Length: 311
Image 1: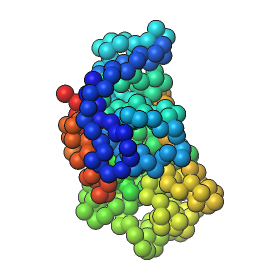
Image 2 (image 1 turned 90 degrees about the vertical axis):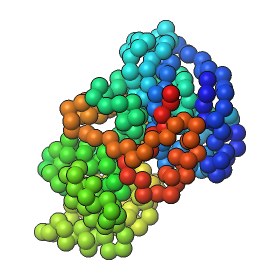
Image 3 (image 1 turned 90 degrees about the horizontal axis):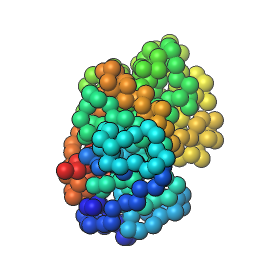
């Protein structure tokens, strides 16, 4: 099969389009013909070697944790899928080697769900990691009926989904931080935009009125945004971040490292099919151009998702 793999860590040019052996199909694995693979910030962090202290890494290392595709074969213990099924998956395991930037992926059954019927493979591939992250952040802070929610980095891959999922969970008001060029995009999603950066607590207070505080907050930015979040909250335990676990835990908040979850991914797909969740794909790249996708993502300020397509 063709795949994007690396044998050393570094700049995007370490990603190589190459021929590798087809994956083995274990008893509880589903062999998926990949149609599209989502590109996420964790992918370039792995490429640079930043996660080597967290997971065993083995080379040649195929990049990617997101996919959408068609089932080719299933292992004898698989009960939920059959050849021809269209699926999506957040295919993360406890070591890093066999990723989704490949024509074929042998995914553990527990990492998959049936693909939403109403969207193409590219949009479906943008859902798993980002959508699960958004949902698990919002659940960690018990977002529910009538809550006001602050979403940091609200125009990004996780953020724009978090805005919409917050409403699906019952939030009455969502405020999203973003650069001014993305404010209209956030309004289209139903959020009230606020510019990120110095003075954010004051701008949020002015926007919300009353006591100037909100109920819950989810963070994908870290840094100053995370450090200032408690100033904005009524209850400082009701915030969560995917960045800087030491800081958020010291603040009394929650650190979230997204987990594969078939039930959650199925629920998100149902939201898409009901028209309650939209996956914004800024740009697609053919698989062999994965390095260019990494370059664009590392520059920051991507609206929504980047996706690789596999022909």
